[in-house]
Length: 221
Length: 221
DNA sequence: TAGATTGTTAATCGATTAACAATC
DNA sequence: TAGATTGTTAATCGATTAACAATC
Image (cartoon, rainbow over all chains, first blue to last red; front, side, top):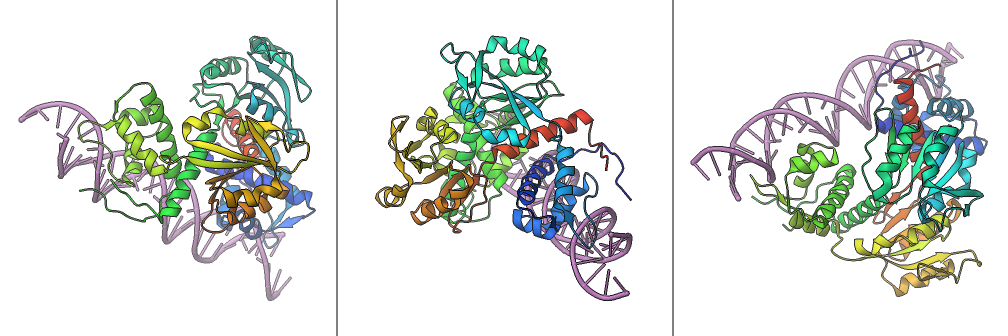
């Protein structure tokens, strides 16, 4: 009995794990593995088979009892579910070191992402090329968004201009923002923001390592 | 009654949130705010006051009934708890675009992190300077670790050499690895790894945006 | 003191795991 | 068919929230 169309709320955790399954499946298909069980795949990832099946169950049924999953089929269906059957066009704002690194990330292309515009406010940077794309004046962003359909906005600008950039992106029809600026962005309800706090992750790493070293917590209040 | 020294297990979530509290408190102290209640701080972060107090409760008591928290004191105590009262020395392996961007990240210094070595395998990159540090041959890493105390290893190399680098780091006494390579690293138990999967986060963003657009899940199995 | 807000326990909620019937 | 593994429900576990006594 196939699962009926639904509009339940999907936990963020589940969404994040689906992205992981997607990556593993892509690797498998690339390696020519054409079949996998929930047990094998979950072992590889480091979760339980129950959790993997439960996660997939949110979206329908993808396998075959007594057999497992056909990697290529599962990959294709997850890809479509995520929305990566359609290419995603992106703009990046903030062509500093991190912005340049992301703009130069070659494998975006084979993963379905197209960077179509880079913007900055620094006159010394505007007009230079990054990975073959000319850096435009950020004041052009608004009109660029009127002329082009953009799915994703990447903010690698500093904290202070980030909210203003998010406003322009939101108004310009971009409903997904990948934010590297250390500010909490306020955006319309229909816009999704994914924050990347690299420093938080480094701080957390230090804390984890110290907890381990101390053998738990040794509170010395 | 002060909490006794303990060695319970701290959930990763709690550890991650402590890093967030730390960032907010730093901002507050910088802004000259010297007092805050759990209600105010949690509102700002977007969590409940209960959760904030519960999280802190894992590590002791930090406030004053009827008053709240003194930001400077709380910041200092969390800093010490995390282990950032001591400076963290780091090496970075993989001086490509992303590695260079991270190596050039100025504010590591005021946050207590010192990058003391950069390594790469590419002869064209070895010998060049990034942010004032010479890029060394990755074959020097092992001996470098014998001569220097290193707290954190940052892997921004490609997937294939990542495990080998992790092995050298682990053997060289580094017990915290910040890994940007899209591989699951196998390390000794005393070593902590924090994986950064930037592409997963981008894929998750696309999925979230599409779920929102579709108004939930519309399964078309 | 009275008011406020913490520290901390208890209740609730949600997520993970276990189990097993369905079925390939 | 028999064996295997999914899909799916039920049980467990853990994390979040609520509540309130302690106390500044």
